[in-house]
Image (cartoon, rainbow, N blue to C red; front, side, top):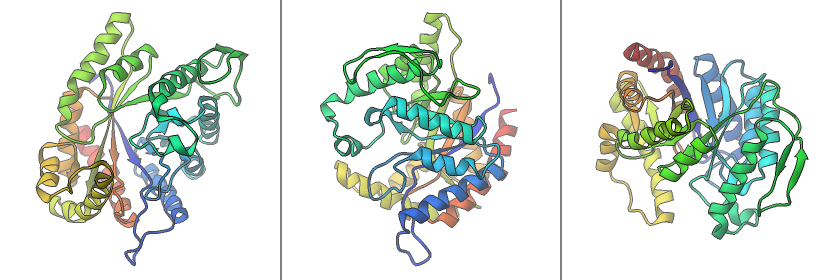
Length: 343
């Protein structure tokens, strides 16, 4: 591999259950997320990403505010979004907020820009879903123009034009590391190349190696413009426990509850245990003992040639204490094992 694999964690700030089996207040979930980042930092994980949602079952609507809290209690782990829903935000404000996180963390901020998998933010902020494509394309174009931190002249259809505009605060040792999150669209892959940005593949189901054509397209598109390709990363769900059986028994009830709740909104049938076992055995659910999870990550890293793997460890009401143990095992056991397998 061209570089040593980086290891990340992602959370969507799912509202978790407390010891009494009842959902915790959103405020407590947010405080727990900061503790999870502190542990991830302590056990040597490279990155933690916080997702953005605007609905009752997720606690985080402003990832940057949570990341700022994490920045003040960690020292080395990189801090980013997973993802920032750029389509329904203001690109200049997004840049300013991440520049602020970067300052608080002494240069550890990253942003992963995407469209998200939910659309609640559009009506919430007065946006028309019919403008879905245009909003993302123009806002990404504007955001990319901010990255060099030079006077920007820009014109589009979604806002008044800018002329020789500087944005503050600047990223101290810029540019801000910016990824494009992609769920499996060739157009999105080519767009990342057009803006010369690293690619984060959200692989949440099925054989991860089915995304190899997208990685190949990314490298081929870079070859056509005569530039070296930027890194490719993978975001996938998973969970680590002492044994395979323990991981399944602890994770399945919470995962099914989350999956069925979202599925009911989207017309999916309830998830059965067979489907779950299939994803664990041959899909994109990185679940089991440290050895099992490490083997699967190593296989994905080799098969796709990725530079970073991000484990989405949160799953609906799965308790904070279980998430903490998963983080500990991931950092202390899984990461060293994968490094050995890839050496």
